[in-house]
Length: 345
Image (cartoon, rainbow, N blue to C red; front, side, top):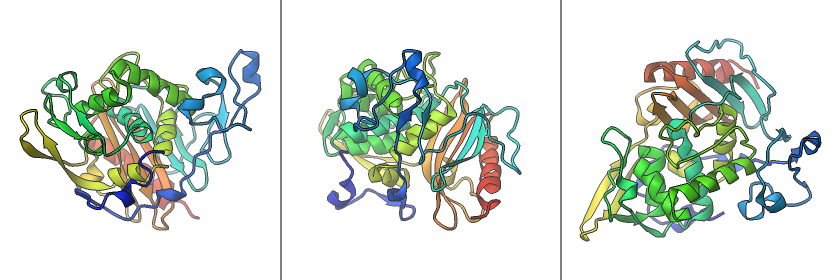
């Protein structure tokens, strides 16, 4: 995977990591599709071949996988999973907590409901940028990539700006820049439309069959949706790349940008999740490494996070559709407390 060893190649970082990262132990292995799917005319993967997660070699001429996926090292649930000590608020769209070491769903509330993901979409955009891009490549920002409304989340990019792909991924995952997302899409696939096709093919390859993307940033569209479980699958796959973990661990990043007129300027970007921004504290004994937020009127307030307990055991936590930011982090803390600090290993 391109960028896997980027941390060792790049001598100077323009940001600070909040803690040492331990994602190397996080493994994802997508395996078998139940044989009954063949009766319904659904593609079956041959486990003896190295298809899984590889766009270039998707099984059977890149047909889209649909069906029931299971694997011994994935957290799998067939329905809701209750968590003692945590009662999701009635306004929430979904909530989930995944123990990566134990391959266990600790909490699952409406995890398979079709939901709008808002900017949590950008996790897939970053995943593809790291998979198919060269982090040192210089990207020129198009007029299309700067065509956003004043109240939409952007990195402050201007038409004709040049910056590296690495810069763009930092702006995407920290500042949640829609402009960065579009610039990445155009760099990888030539257009947003072509990139959305790649997003959907890759989502299917990861087993995220309740997902359909139409853009790289998550601005609302009725045909742009996912599930809390699919969001876990995508985020989990992203954690396999150490550069992804390094980026979401940053508490700030300063990008050096060359304008169309040749003038240099810096843009400073900070994380949008309240834990990394210092606006919320996780429960005692839990550290939030980083993650991705998303907010629209239709999606509500959403966040997917990479967490560690006091013993450095990794978790992924998801809250979708909270009515406001305060409620989002209150619900997250209650779930983390019940599921992590309230459990014994």
